[in-house]
Length: 211
Image 1 (cartoon, rainbow, N blue to C red):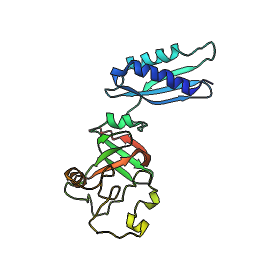
Image 2: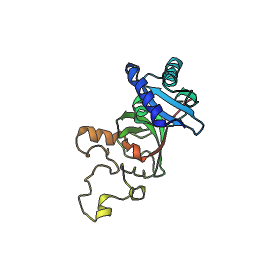
Image 3: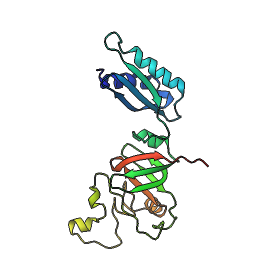
Image 4: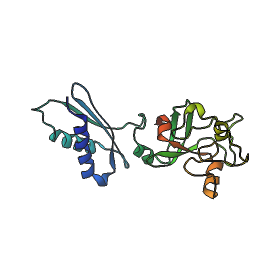
């Protein structure tokens, strides 16, 4: 069986060669029958020429005489879930549906992304209000937080008492990445922006509209 790490190293060499194209790896898999599947994406999309070039580059560096294989290089489909942080950055401004490990499902626009998480502006949330409906919104767990503890405040967990109007990072109504202080954070709270860590996400997909 061909070593998956070897395939990934070859693919990485190709991506470095094509650094100006904005291409990036989404996933690489190798089956016990040496069926190699590579999925690519790119900041400007992926065309058939890029897939053909990647396929030829990888194939030329594997020895069929030593071990035969089947190679498929494709672009990540719009209906496929996100697998790497770069896909969140590429899709800034697009509406997505996010399923969290705690069971919640959110829908909104990606505002920004980095190596640890992304900012989501919830669809249908009223500006200037923390309520989008008459129901109380479930709290999104902070990165690394046990989903079973998500509904509890730090006071409930530690027994500490503090002013009722004081908020902390990771609490409902706060952007997790920074304390709730300053105009930027206040604006984020008013506009219903959530900071979500990738470790909280079960699945993220683009919302495809057929209008």
